[in-house]
Length: 228
Image 1 (cartoon, rainbow, N blue to C red):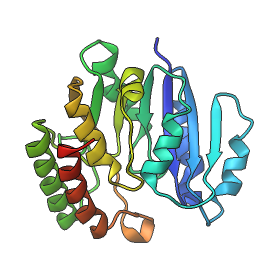
Image 2 (image 1 turned 180 degrees about the vertical axis):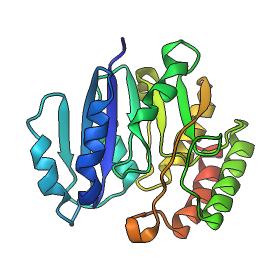
Image 3 (image 1 turned 120 degrees about the horizontal axis):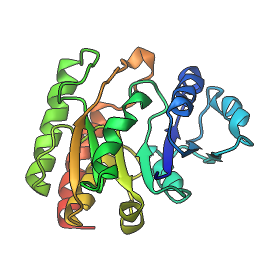
Image 4 (image 1 turned 90 degrees about the vertical axis):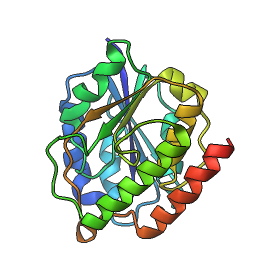
């Protein structure tokens, strides 16, 4: 059975972090859990100290806030597993979906799996304008990559060690999503998409992505279409 590396980028998630980690621990796979704090200021670092010396955990701290993409790069560089799963530190994505994410990789069909919030899984009702923005960005990305995804911006992505070793990421913030998609497509990795559940947060609950990140994503979609 393949070993999983669960990479968790964290920024100001004190209220959800323990519960999320507990859910990840409960999933019955051989795994390591890699926690990367991107200079949290809400007490998250005090929570993370509880995991510093725990078996199968690695904990890293950034000395300034540089963004989700930068935290993921730190985590990817420390992985020792055969398959990497990106897991946000909030409770929007449920680790009980790991089996669905992993199936196409474990049976040899896929190198990369996107977990789609729009393929029929149970989900909290979305903000309509977020939904439209997501569909627009996914469509624009599909045009540039010739993939046929329904949810390019999903936070749930699983991929093999070969993919991780082959790709060099540069984006520091949420531009990671279009960058990852473009580079996976350019390298002709086998991509699958599966339905996942989703419990989206609103901004009062700590959601961080904003309209500015949406406009930045448009730039990154075109940038990584034509450059590396």
